[in-house]
Length: 204
Image 1 (cartoon, rainbow, N blue to C red):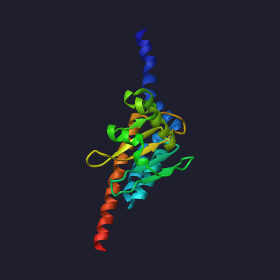
Image 2: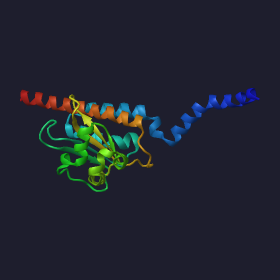
Image 3: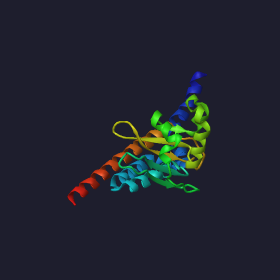
Image 4: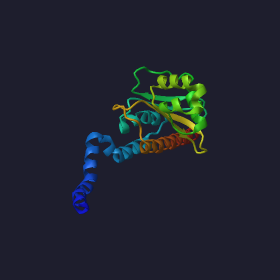
């Protein structure tokens, strides 16, 4: 009867949330600790007093939070000075900065101002004319997804390229939102570091 079915389903519905939480904690331990990891990473970004130190922390964020195999953090020329700044972590083949700011992938990032995933290059028509070039640059960065760093005027000032995850899972939307917030915190830390450097120079 319907009452018997309801009586059988009630314990399942009641117990399922706690069972699901325990299963997630076992299968995805970093996901269960994500709030704690975000707070720790945020404090570390805020404590850095130099641009290269901030980029170094940013390059490791994917591994620390989401088990990314690699990360490359880039600050484009013209953001704080005329140099391209870069920090890489976990790449099998080291990359030289060269003309990274001129990559088609970064030019496209400046136009879209949102993340670009390797998988989207195959299906979105806006990438059709530069598809082979973009895929080659994804390979060069060892990346599966590239996220923008925006300045106070919403212009793309840099980027974070993340490699595939250790378990080969896709990045989820809420995870990208968390990364986006930390990337912006990294930009604010870079701005503070530069302001402090300018103040110290004036004092000298």
